[in-house]
Image (cartoon, rainbow, N blue to C red; front, side, top):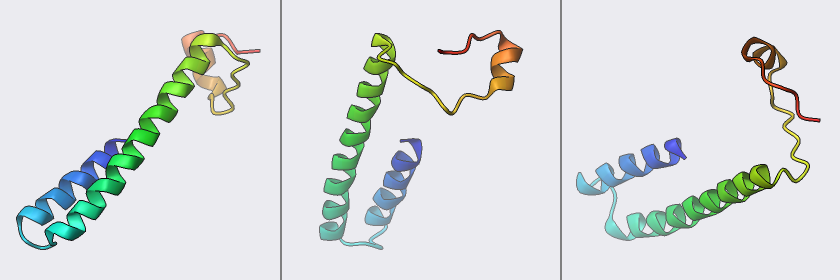
Length: 75
C-alpha cells in the first residue's frame, strides 16, 4: 500500500503542475480509491483469519529467521 500512496502523491503533483488534466485525475482517483479499499479489506480479512487461527498456513516463513528468533513453527 505504501507504493500505492507514493504513486498517488506523484499523480497529485502532476495535476497541480498542469501536466495532466482534472478529468484524467478524477478517473485515476476513483480507481485508486476502489483499489485502496479492496486492499484494506483484504488485509482486515487476513488479520481476522490470523486472530481466529483458521488453519492459517504461511508458506512464506523463512525457517532460518524462526530459528534465530526462537519462533515456533505453525503446524
